[in-house]
Length: 303
Image (cartoon, rainbow, N blue to C red; front, side, top):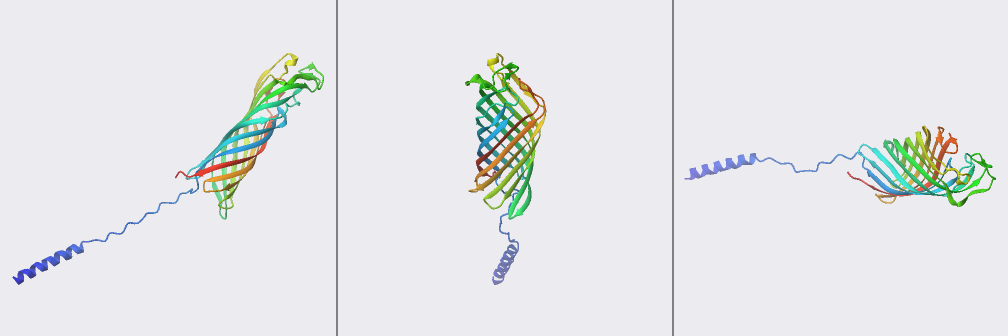
């Protein structure tokens, strides 16, 4: 009896030892870190901008004040390739028609301004210690249109389209419309943006573009005063001209998402190709616009 009981205990101990030997330690689970983003900064910038400007063209001798609003955007992917731009419009005030190629002068009022820019480019970090500097070459497109309405007509040179008139005499009252027209530029942009971030909040940005190809289109109506018994409607297109566009901005990040900026902008375009304006053939045509702007943008990340 005792021998049988001892045998049972021995078998039980062997079984328990074998079972214990088969138990394996399972390592505790741990978090696997995700790879860091190649571009951890916000990927989207959406904003609104106000631009006050003064400009002139071959059709207008005096500067015309402009007030416009723009929708501004920029988006970057993980490889720092970006697509940015703005579209806007507003109104112009003041000015007089150019007497260099016309025989009369008129007051200009009720004009409009429409424009837009789209750029595609790539960011390259130049410095990443202390002051962070990014160089961003791009290629893009710009459209710039100004419309005008002229009122009244005063004799300037003693004749209008070959018909005599007294210099200074009023041909059409300034309460009546004498001409209307539209000037638009379509341009290729080649340039670069340089951004320097001096702290977590303060950023300086400079944008410069050459316009190696700039096409001018004009649509002028009723350019010849009705006082001489004729009217004219003329449209004209030019061969490729050129120009440049410059922009600088100081931006302050007030939060991680909201930023406010202020800056200056200058646009210039010209062409020496043929343009028919009804009264005369104008081969040298130029437009320029300079002003200051302020904007507010909201920045966020989508990945």
